[in-house]
Length: 105
Image (cartoon, helix red, strand yellow):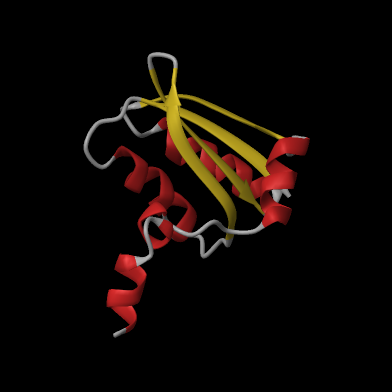
């Protein structure tokens, strides 16, 4: 498993282009987190990939105009911990309970 850290400018469609490079290769995304980081944004992904796929992904990501940096390596302990803890429900699903009860009705 490899961790990828992609720094990008948040313009329309940039994150979708980053994720399209992954889905084009039919790779499973074990974990993804996208958040503001300094002057731009950062997407963290955990993927099971071969060395050839690492090269292809990095080439595709660098070809996106708004991607400023791509780093990869072994996943850190906090990313592995987030993977083990499982998915979290959306905030709207847990806020007040009225939205979830209305959806079930």
